[in-house]
Amino acid sequence: MPHIERLSAILVDLPIVRPHLLAMTAVEQRTLVIVRLLCSDGIEGLGEATSIGGLAYGEESPEGVKLTIDTFLAPALIGKEATNINAASALAGRVVKGNPFAKAAIETALLDAEGKRRGLSITELLGGAVRDALPVLWTLASGDTARDIAEAEELLAARRHRVFKIKVGRLPLSDDLAHVLAIRRALGDRAGLTVDVNQRWEEAEAARAIATLEDAGIDLVEQPISKYNRAGLARLAARFVVPIMADEAVCGPEDAFDLARQAAADIFALKIAKSGGLHAARRTAAVADAAGVSLYGGTMLDGTIGSVAAAHVFRALPLLQWGTELFGPLLLKDDIVTTLPEYKDFHLHIRPGAGLGIELDENKLAFYRRDRSSRSTVGNFGPVHHVVPR
Image (cartoon, rainbow, N blue to C red; front, side):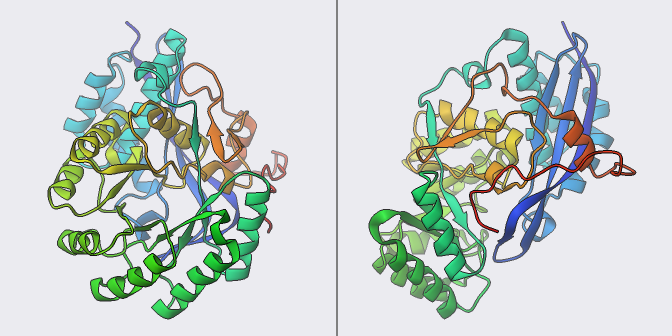
């Protein structure tokens, strides 16, 4: 049986098409942790861990993920059987508590390698595809109302997205609501709109704001208050018709069970990194299905490797009522893979191939990796996405 021969974590800093503003931070570039896992039979698996805004957003940063892999997980896993993914994941759970992003990246790499070994996609390893393509929304997060409207109009015309998430929480409540309502008026019924607060509101102001958003025809409101205030989320979910989605509040299946028990959300945002891996994300989805909670395929603004890994899981889920937001690769101005995902007719289409179906562009990886002592010997690379105006 092949064993794990080498496991490395590489920090990669990639430019993005525009700043991405959240309630708690501004994303100016994307830092990915790329995992390369080499097996004794010569097969390499790829994985990715990416956090939206580092420690300003959540408990894991790219730097911390790399440290966890290099210092704890790699020494424990090297020499272990590469084909027994369940045993490797269980060992990772014993060696390191928490740190789901690091574990998800390693499990992705193991599944990628196993798919290549068997000539099967990860979706096929998970039992097969329920859906061939995934609807994908785009997040309007420039911070400028006119620019957000222009972005939405361009993407509608290009048939790339017809649902848009509006980021709020950085401004006073009245300004945030004016921003959302202006976009709603401009787009009318040509596009669906959701609002993401990233926990920024207090419960009382959330109640006032959600009433306005509901009247305006907003499709859902994402994580309006603190993830720790589950009783408050339950009160809001019971009070309004517009669905309340838990994002930061739901990580793995244990969170899903507790939130469902309290009727604290109508929808769960499912993310493989927060869940701790592809299999754990499926367990989280199973809890939601059993409780009658709808599912939405979320993102940590993952790059191509992380987005495609999530897409393989989402394609295999029995239910995915609210589509996905796997637009991370489109936010990048350049990429480190040889073939980009295909976005057309408002959907993400997964290209055929074994494992993830992805190959690294070694020259671009060398150029963008953080630990490169000098980038002067590597040529500059032009942007790969021009749909959204600078």
